[in-house]
Length: 216
Image (tube, rainbow, N blue to C red):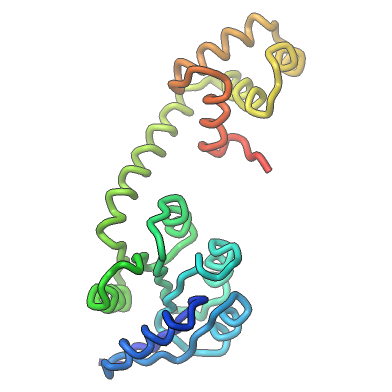
């Protein structure tokens, strides 16, 4: 079996040194480089040939998801990426999956599990720590439910929802869309029923969560 060449990216020196020592007890692994910040990470990914990158993007004191996206753009062809996360942050987990990783595991895992995950990834599989799979399934169900709610809205109701989300009153929406205030009120009532909310604030949260409106 060919030696698996690895890059480690983590802010904590102890974490990098510990993983290096553990992996290199096995002749099948070699740590070719390690980095503690974004700049170092981009440099070594460009300069070193590696089979897989192990990183804790959330330990870098920077926008970890942005770093992950940029690493995906800069990495050499064929390089795999595995996130080793310090906490079970489901939002970051799902966003990392969307950006594109080959594996995602928590630091609470055993070294044997980590090593097995690396082998699976090198063999072309995607590895997600089992504890996270149920969270992913639940999140997918929420997205599916939200999509069904969005699809139930008419074009006009979507327009009204987007406008009330940015703080417009019924009268303002009516003037903007060229319809009566009573009609806007009816649309708002229908929106509440269709998306399962009780007030304008909840409707706005739904719209933002569903990416119908981006609030900077």
